[in-house]
Amino acid sequence: MDIETLQAYGYFFFTVFLVVVLYAYIYHLYTAKKKHGRDYEELSNMALRDDITDEPVNKVSDETEK
Image 1 (cartoon, helix red, strand yellow):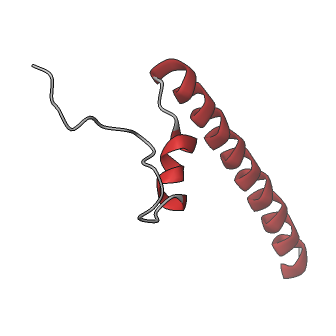
Image 2: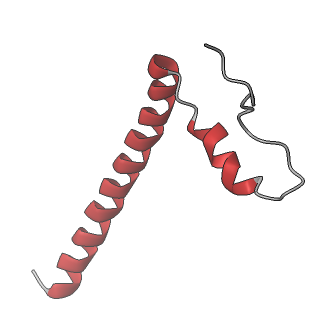
C-alpha cells in the first residue's frame, strides 16, 4: 500500500466523519428546540440585527414585576 492509497482512504474516512458530525449537530439543534425550547436560530439573529435602529430580538420590559 503506497502513500497515495493511504491518503485516499484517509480523505474518504475523514469526509464521512465530518458528514456524520454535521448531521449529529443538526439533529442536536432540532431536538434541543423541541425538548428545551432553545431556539438557536432566533439567537443567531442577534448577530445579524445589530444596528441601532433594529428592534430587539427578545423584547424585555423596563418594569420588573414583583
